[in-house]
Length: 271
Ligand SMILES: C[S@@+](CC[C@H](N)C(=O)[O-])C[C@H]1O[C@@H](n2cnc3c(N)ncnc32)[C@H](O)[C@@H]1O
Image (cartoon, rainbow, N blue to C red; front, top):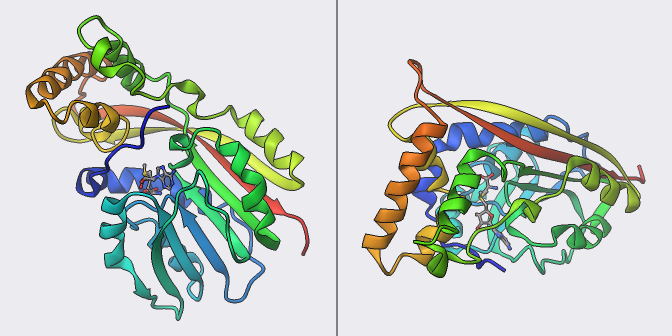
């Protein structure tokens, strides 16, 4: 199983506007929460910039962002404290592979994280059991493992020059499920579920913007694996950059970057 990568919050936040859009689209489908004030968990909160948006929708909420990356949690800590609407925001270490809530939540949300958690559907029962009656579990995962950005990365890693050093480092398409499969899991657990997919066409600015994007996420396992050999790391990035330029040509107004994402909002019955 590929190891968890080392995260670089500054690199990740370089495309914060585009990356936040699916989170706001996900929140728009979350129904009213039962608790007053609501208790909310953001699982895989990253640098905390989208966790803050939860306080915009539920101003009095008590919100905890959980993550297993010390780098991301250190960045998120800057957002912690009382929120303007009388709520509170804090952050804590937790690993989604084992996280078992110890209190009821009105909302457990997870944005762009579960693709890093192999077998994550096996965790759903514990999380849904921890919801207050009428509470919601909502998540979004990228569904772009067959897109050129990821396919080209995998092909290069598997090529004769790199395969000995990068074998098994990258995730594959089975990191996430089809929307129908998520619907099946969530309804089998007794929830009413709303599942859908969207392909965003992000218009990215600057030179080699797709490379810049994946340096914050999908490419991190390769950057980690070659971290001790900067010459090799740069050589891989150069080859990959050339392939990306062909796959994602720049247009007069920017570089279009199609990005499919899968969303699910599951409500536990009860109120
Ligand atoms: C792509 S970032 C998403 C961050 C944030 N949710 C957002 O939407 O911007 C993925 C996050 O998942 C976290 N993560 C990955 N595996 C995890 C695990 N097993 N447990 C907790 N967090 C995890 C990473 O540390 C990282 O912060």
